[in-house]
Amino acid sequence: MLRKSLIVLSLLSVSLSAMGTLGSTPEQKKAKPQTFLWNNATVYFLLTDRFNNADKGNDLAYGRQADGAPLRGFMGGDLKGIIAKIKDGYFERLGVNALWMTPPVEQIHEGTDEGTGKSYGFHGYWARDFTKVDANLGTDKDFKNLVDIAHQHGIRVLLDVVMNHTGPVTVSDTAWPADWARTEPTCDYQSADGAIKCTLVKNLPDFLTESDKAVELPPFLAQKWKQEGRYEREVKELEVFFGRTGFPRAPRYYLMKWQTDWIRKYGVDGFRVDTVKHVEAAVWKELKSEASVAYEEWKQAHPKSRLSDDAFFMTAEAYNYPIRDGLLFRMDGGSRINYYANGFDSMINFGFKSDAHLPYETLFSQYSSYLSGELKNYSVLNYISSHDDGFPFDPARVQPFVAATKLMLSPGSAQIYYGDETARLLNVNEAQGDAKLRSMMNWTALQKNLPIASTQSAQTKQTTRDLLSHWQKLGQFRRAHVAVGAGLHQQISATPYVFKRSYQRDGVSDTVIVALDLPVAKVHQIDVSGVFLDGEKLHDYYSGKSGIVKAGKFELPGQHSIILIGKP
Image (cartoon, rainbow, N blue to C red; front, side, top):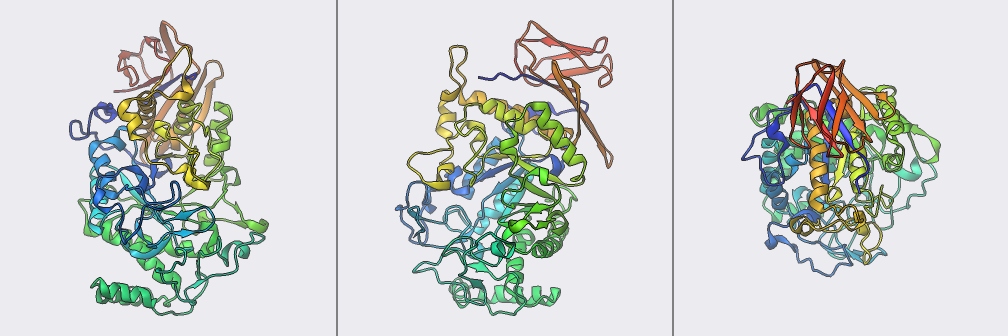
């Protein structure tokens, strides 16, 4: 049951057409261009194979079988499925302005049993060929269409990048040569080298990213490209890359070329980088430099397709980094590493899932202090659940509305993990390990508007659509107002709880006021003096009602427990 109420008031105008409803689409209503800051981004993170299946013809490619352990095989989601939801306006109605998908690259073909039952590379982290889209997800053309259509809808695309490891070795998937990847020792996590110069787990070969020794193209990859009729083109591109950069033909530079090609060819706007702490920090700075070159080349070649002149963006997955660590990530063995100084604009905040249990003011004020202090000019990506975190906030979805409010109103950028907005199950009984977190998107629950079992009581029966609507309104507010995630937080009143966020930089000015824990009443009267002027028209984006500021007060019917107000 939703216990919290909020009032949001803003100084930037929000396009009414951008709000949308469950039934409206961008084709019916077009939003005005809105100011975008990565520090305030709302990022939707999904596993392509688990999101939406629009092409059943590619469900099992390369001879794969439907014989995986529970939730460990391919289930049919594809790039066309994501495209369909972009076109439908699903992401725009949710306020999403950045899309992060698991790696789309071709995975090992076979399944393998590493102790949790037969598993396939449906998740994208077991690469076989970094230069091609996995056929289970679609084609290279599908990926290009996805990026193009996302850009047309004002949505940036984050590519999930893996440079630490290959996929497991199987009978038919040839191992990378010994001068490319190590197969032992397994990481012991007792020191920095104990997390870097080692394999994460047994049978997950680790690229020799520390090596400057020149290596030849892996024979299995050369043979594959010849069979596909693109060997000469790929080799020529490598010659151009190494000729331009002067890099030695070491493993990490091949990988950088292949990863940055996704920018140069398709125009992806940023990288979410996997397993950051397991690779030498300086490698990421090199990657950022090459990615930035590729992004500028793409923008110059596609002036009508680029969304802005923003620089290329990178966020880091350094496992267990909490925002309280500031600039210095605490490495295994106690050493400290500044990843922000090594190419990253942001880091995924593993601490938010725990911090979300804090009272609103404690959470918001602490985060604002971190981001306006040591982390000024940078940001963090907050989340309540994820694909490999077995300890999410509210794992049983007992507080799905409060979870949304805390995530979407916290300073920093926000990551919505697919199904957060529809109370998708995070603990599937028949699955093991992280597979429990990776069920198919619960579209049926949304279509049938099923009740959310964990919120049932005698007083309320809230449904999947009720929850989605709540997320949409919060998301639209974030998308329209950069002060929410990037602004400076200041408490105005403890009872009722009211705070202000303000942002003013580089010609962008935005201020918002939020009130929480307001009781449902006949009338709400909010003191907006000093923020809005008498005579200004304000709009409640939750009820759709508007009004005029009189004597420093804004008044509206109080039957709703949550209110979103701003200048129309």
